Length: 404
Ligand SMILES: Cc1cc2nc3c(=O)[nH]c(=O)nc-3n(C[C@H](O)[C@H](O)[C@H](O)COP(=O)(O)O)c2cc1C
Image 1 (cartoon, rainbow, N blue to C red):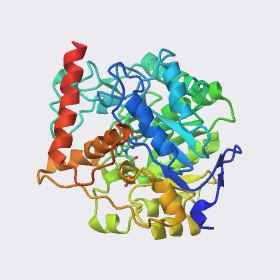
Image 2: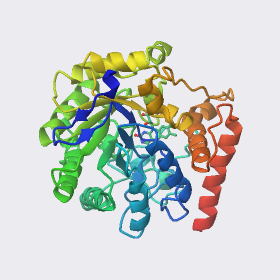
Image 3: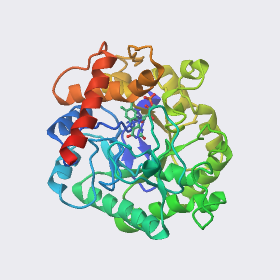
Image 4: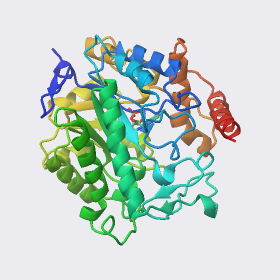
């Protein structure tokens, strides 16, 4: 038996049947009203048969007024409860856990489709194409708004639990709201939500506690968080370790490690070529984190060969291997990695040669593949990047026109 086939038992007794997890990938496949679409459900039916011990959905939003992308699923009340039940049911009869990743994008909300952006502090987002008109620079949240968002994370989680999902994951990585609170670069507040790392971690701790209060002790709550922001003046590795410790102490069930933000997309391997080559981008960090926590650790970013995955689990550096982009191209990936019929899941996007466009491709090219899967087609490894870009632009235009 391969080490990857061994089950993992979380501290609360939850059994994950093997060590392969499909990490969150925003599908951008909701209906216009932000409900799960048939295409979305079809993708999950396919992935459910793919053999992963754990599937984490793409980020869903807790508030329709704070959207990451035009077609994000939103769960703020029970209006789409039956569709959520259908979504949760896609793994019925399998050994796969289906957890929902819950998110608030904060200042990384898409400026074209959100009226007002809110964040811990009014710090403009510096990315190519961002206009940052003064009306679109995020406004600092008031204390009341902070408390409302904490409550919303809890309410959404309870609805998801009742719909039949088997866990939730707080999106605390990649520069979204939770990550903005943690980082001294984006959180320059001088109240109890900013300043020291304990103060900056207060938001995520309160989000966790609110969810826990509502879903009870048996329901797994995980977090995806950054090993660092890789930005001058940003969330450092040392601070990240402190947050790992804080969250472990309050009882989080699984910590997934990634890194980076929209401004520095380290999660996609944007740093050194040698890091991409050695695969697991944040392995050095997780080795150190292992020394300070007993909470199960998942590592995501760059894993492509079973030899590297096995070595990471065998040497006790990580408990779960998180894989994202390859699942968009090889939906049966976990079965193939576990039965040995595939030992390498590298995917290659065709490049346009335009830096800003090629950067976006790391997301929208894979979203286009996920859509193909949901439409009953095979993934298309030679999909033209311009086609993926045009489809994405169309979604944004369509959203703006229909919301007027
Ligand atoms: C299309 C796409 C959408 C993504 N959406 C999310 C998301 O919703 N939440 C998240 O935490 N990470 C998201 N990611 C990042 C992945 O979870 C993962 O961290 C990253 O792709 C690196 O892992 P990989 O090398 O195995 O692809 C997304 C990645 C892609 C390609």
